[in-house]
Length: 464
Image (cartoon, rainbow, N blue to C red; front, side):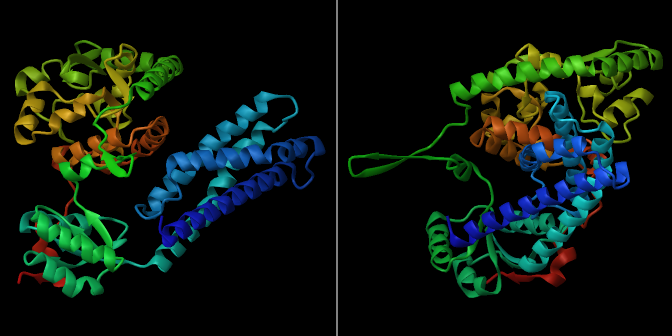
């Protein structure tokens, strides 16, 4: 690990610990507001006895949400994560209250802290976020690669809302010579698309010797080398390439986790599901549930369950097409339950039956799977694990993200799998429930320039 990375990790720990301190201050403020400065000793003793547990809960919750990973966030993202973090911290404090009589937290203080804590903590988080971006500055990027992919990368970076990176140079030919000539003017070199191996290795060597940060566009060769195992036989070192599969022991833990959580959620959410079923029945003629063939692990076909959000004859009239935001086939109740994701809740039954997992690649229909397989020979690798209700692509991509990019997300998920990673993705899924951009239909893709030429006044295009 480089000295700079160690320093960044240490700094992040300090930022989180200060955040925990701000959270404790907000609880003290809530006590004083509740009791107008005259706090009963017995009540405050509960806080003094449990503040270390609160700090621990704060750190775990915000680790799962990734609140203090600032580089890919906006101020609005930061507010979402702060609010959600405070909500779950309040639940944790209530759990501590019921854990024993020695913890006599008034529930009114916990609820008041949801307000005071969100305000104080967001003020601190926004300040830390501002300092982070102000001190680290905007990173200049040299994009290297064949024209189509390189210039599409320009558009993708310009779409980013946090403006953490700026593409200043694009090398469309003579890649090595341009890297040598212009790498001093940029902070990051991003290799995208196909580059001959000999030239690519020369670029790697140059960048490593000059300690320059390197970004690589995901392709199968790069994805294969994620999380390798280092082995040695006598004096021989070997790299064992891990497969695109979840190890047996972890698969058992994942299945147990799926069963416990889905059972609990079905019990807790049963009133919501009952109200939804009644609303669907009253709103339009037809069945309550919608069943559709999808592909899961080992390319097995199963019937996915959803609350019906379209007219009963929608599929017969239109055939297999992706839903759009203004789709006339969607019913009145359907628009509501889609907006708040309630239509997905019956998939918890698919999870219990072993057809799906809580987290994994989203299942596609056989019609589209056949199309995707014809376009990408590695598409079937995503079927080495169970399909999921949510996934890496759903948290970090958009509805309009193309299937190749979603496949890269899915394969990275499999390679990096851990139960903690599943926890993190489940927590971060809560945020995208309120994010319209993540769920909009295919006709609602952001209004952006259709070509890199709209940004060419900001670029140095290197073609020779």
